[in-house]
Figure 1 (cartoon, protein in one colour):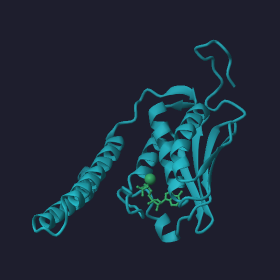
Figure 2 (tube, rainbow, N blue to C red):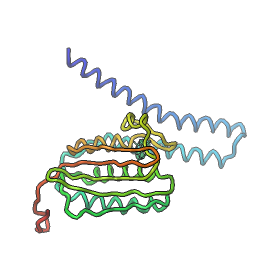
Figure 3 (cartoon, protein in one colour):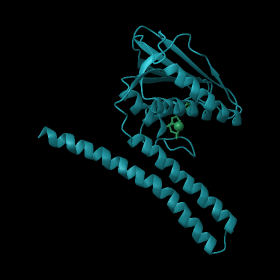
Figure 4 (spheres, rainbow, N blue to C red):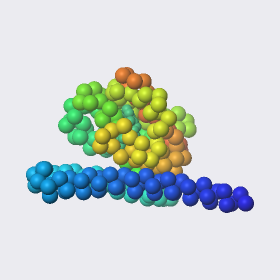
Length: 235
Ligand code: ADP
Ligand code: MG
């Protein structure tokens, strides 16, 4: 029956995901085991083995926490809020990380309030993931520009970088679980972004040119003006 096919398709997606998770966790474990053996044979020092174990455990931890974000259901309780404020908060936090990479984040504050139905934590996670990718594409020089726009129906958030850009063969694979081109990447960040934005009834698009940079654009439904808790009208 039709239902059988639907179920088996779902199962195969879960099966694939489970297989890739197992693989991703096994990699660092294999590394740890291999180096422990070398250490027992006196090939490497105690100090080396500690630092290898430490960084491989970090890797498993990163994967686990990104999977937890993915697995978390988006709260049904979306609240009306100015998404421009969230974006600003995230830019301030991310600037401190960007400083270490010699990158500056240009935040162009919105002239108007950008009211959407939001889950604060999850939208901030989306902005953080995309800005982080932009910073990582820059290789210690360049800029990230964060700007917003608004029509009658939608809010647009643009995150642009002048980094390495995305080749065509990579473009097709973005958003697939564990697809990464980075040595220390997890390939889970964009997947979480797509999921969260979809559950906010929004869309994510990007354009990119190798050697020139990338622009990620998020569209969210704008909601009508309403009174806030402080009683002042917002537009
Ligand atoms: P990760 O950052 O762990 O690799 P993501 O899901 O966040 O995982 O991103 C997947 C891949 O998408 C990255 O490895 C990179 O190849 C590509 N990518 C995403 N954003 C950008 C960007 N702004 N510039 C260049 N490549 C990008
Ligand atoms: Mg990322």
